[in-house]
Length: 486
Ligand SMILES: [Zn+2]
Image (cartoon, rainbow, N blue to C red):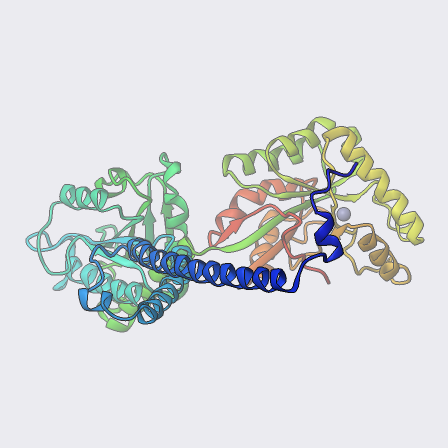
């Protein structure tokens, strides 16, 4: 419905005299001009006020308390505006810098370096070679390298002075240091043949991650020096390892009671090698490489359980590519895998290569069956999978590519591997499996390691294998992980 009309008859018909029309037009022009002037004035005032307020807001934002110098306020408005613009740009630039800076400076690790003994306390000594001097020499080299790499370093002593161990620990605990490394030399009266390196830590304080630190320091220092391998001891019970509040270890880099080793330890080249090893260990401690442990063919009853127990005790999450038939046989184990936070992927329903790789249809049918089983038993709907035998194998030459295309179209992602225990053989020897794992992993920054939780030897060697790979942080696969594909 339309509203009441308000126009008049005269207006519509143009019924007015020439004089009337002239006056009306003039009146309108006059009103328009005044209105224009008024709005210009108001606009100018608003601009000015906003500008002053804006500048203040900007300076406040930049954390500057001082006001604009008085001579600037007397400058014409456009100059102030230019300054505001420049200030705004500077502020914007400042904000842009802050974002990455915050990410980068998440935390600069603080290393507490503790060269043992010092001053009146010489430590052990043989033939005029004193432990306190070698400890300090190595520690100074470590400090130099660490600072080059951007670490913050605190030293219990950087000169030949006596400092009680209680004092060292107190200072370290109060400093907020992230790790504590004590450097010592060994000696024994049990024979001059004894030589080699030992690293000590406190096993019963696993929350401190001291074991991984000790493993890394040991692994990397042995590698850089070629020194004889001695124990990694978790029962240190030294004041500095026991009473420090951060991950801590103590390294005995060699025996002064062994003439050959004593000579080496006195050489600055050898001291540098020790220092390089310690620094590399520290570097891996803070910047580990990544490993995705993957277990195929399970679950089984005892073997999967053994693997899960080890992973749980070490707080490691892995990935299990399950076989549908085994999930139906051991549903509790499949549920335990999920409950303990591991990733589940599909391997197959029936691990029979011939039937699987007959055609695209036979593959997909088997796969969907396994996926359905896993969903029914565990409630997990996964789109991660691994081809039995890998994506390229002796059985899928004709249909492999077509299967990959079909599976990709269906939204599934497959993961091959770039390291392997090679444990899918008859009666594998645990020692050999560890060697395989370490060798195939060697030097890689990102590793997807193939293993089989159904294999007895794999469960048996897993502890030692993990101990051999302290430079890796173990993570579970997820859709976000770029797959390794043959
Ligand atoms: Zn398999």
